[in-house]
Length: 281
Ligand code: A2P
Image (tube, rainbow, N blue to C red):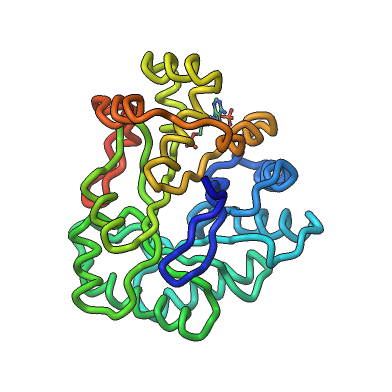
């Protein structure tokens, strides 16, 4: 398996990225520096993670050239709209200390107020992303947490098909309808919480497969995403586990095992759904 995916516009993206959300409360920079030392070049952040400055500093201080990194950020749900998105993009670049991003995403399809009119807002926001892309300030543009009806709204009213859709994805919460719909359109699906925020580590099937393939449960989850054509963005605060999470190209999960993983009952869901109030689990 190749260690990159290729987006619809030809841009190559490292096949495993590092999720920086709540990397470690007040220790983000050290964690991100460690991830870079362990070999991560694809770093996923967002305005809402409040760590773009830490990511930027870790990148600069790594000594690794900027062009070797793939940096993603996202516009937060309470900043949707054309002008505010352009402003947010500039703000993210400034905090990251870069003059371009590799990927910029709409973080959620709806504002915090779920009853607000989201369709026009998404279209305006997407038009801002299209303009940023056309002016080469960003190498690829996409969305996050978009279900088929959110995507359709963009497809009907704008011209560029998103290149990425980042979704919660792990054994026990695969969002098949959204993944299939995205993949049919040539949209690269990325997985946030590919290990189900550690909620799936005790699942007996996963433990059995970890034993069978002589890897960890986390490695099964990450490899599972890759074999589904989905780009995993695991998080970890430990150098050893960061390293382990990148070491997923030396084994292959057999078809029957993949099917068992795909048909697990719901497990480890975060409680987040783009059209609903968050469920506390
Ligand atoms: P830790 O920071 O102690 O490594 P997700 O990426 O699905 O949100 O999951 C993140 C959670 O999974 C964190 O709690 C992290 O804990 C844990 N985790 C990450 N990698 C591994 C691993 N290789 N083995 C066990 N737990 C892991």
